[in-house]
Length: 270
Image (tube, rainbow, N blue to C red):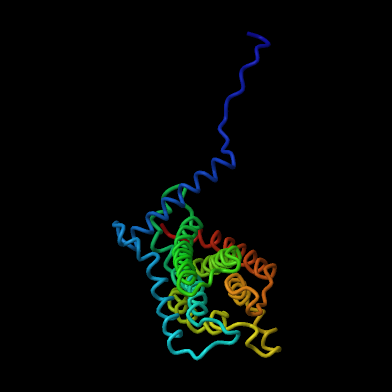
């Protein structure tokens, strides 16, 4: 029939919402898989997700509480050391597991919707959830036992999120490098322990001489620890941090990390 107009052929187009929903389901499934792999299939095994950072943080805090003779600013040693160790546990846990993240889950990349970034995000979110749960338990304990509740819980939550994002960016670079050499797997554990004195976990900026304060504030993790302490102790001790500086580090590390992962993905042999 001349002049007839045929209907347009329907075509499928994935909206941003459907893509995000799909990746959310993928990350959720990877989270459950990681839980089962690390802690077993029973509920009691899942408790170790929170008990491990809580027990380590509590042991370190308790040790300093009973042997310490007081701290600058009149800080409670138990509170100070627990609040210091748990955010450091996020940093240490994410970085230490980064070299084996891809080899341990390489078979999952056969699935079309699973990406290397999804795998790393799931593992790191699990680490962040575990330490956040431990931190919340201790904050309730501090309030009940010592009568000291956080001055600004939002700052503490924001600080924990920043630490996870910072660690995530570094872990992307480590995971990408580990595809090419085993050197990362051998050195990361050592470096995280050697770097502990520099992270700002177990000291505050105002304890340092002025010139050393300026040098310490070049380290992004120092700002995060200061933010978390500000959220808990408030104005009882002076704190020094620049959130914009930390966000710049996070943005740069994550962008570089995603670029490195994208390049390294081509060299993964399935």
